Length: 248
Image (cartoon, rainbow, N blue to C red):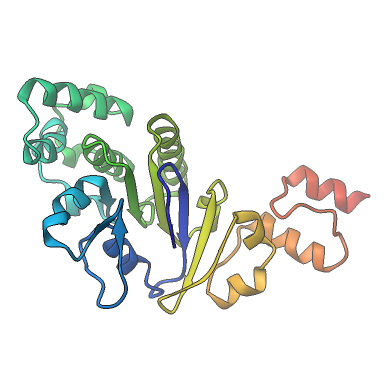
């Protein structure tokens, strides 16, 4: 599998399919026992290359508290910047920019523990993006959020990806979060089962079911209706399109 700069690649699969292991391999936190993982040509097994690998690819964990280290939002974002030796004046500008980017610009002095779950994930994104990586890996970063917070986080990530030309690798088991991806990697049993655009996967409900993935309601209904003869129905229709097809 190859992921290019600026790509939005979604990695979809049930629990235990190997998604989190893949996330750690992509970011150099784990090294492969077979094969190779190259990050912009750097082999993650090369210890001398790991520093640049970690700067190039940033990882957002499922539980945001696992990566919060500061007593304020500004201090949390500053932690990674201090580690790369950014000058103090530039650091202050970078912190303000990153927090503003995720909608937390007016809360720089607040404690991270005063944030909601969705806001904590925004802080994690700010701390990662402040380092100006080329790729951002999200390891089920929306799993602990309610549906509204998940939608807000995904909309923010897609905006940042567009503005920064950031490669986005989103690992999830929620199909509705992958519909805007350039392509979806379907995993099961530690292997890639299929790499395809979302529209193609929507036409493979049997394969998705075999891999333990449940389609959102309207795409699932559309698949059943197409099997019943409504072949003109799109794989991911709107409610009005479904009603129009049924009434005709």
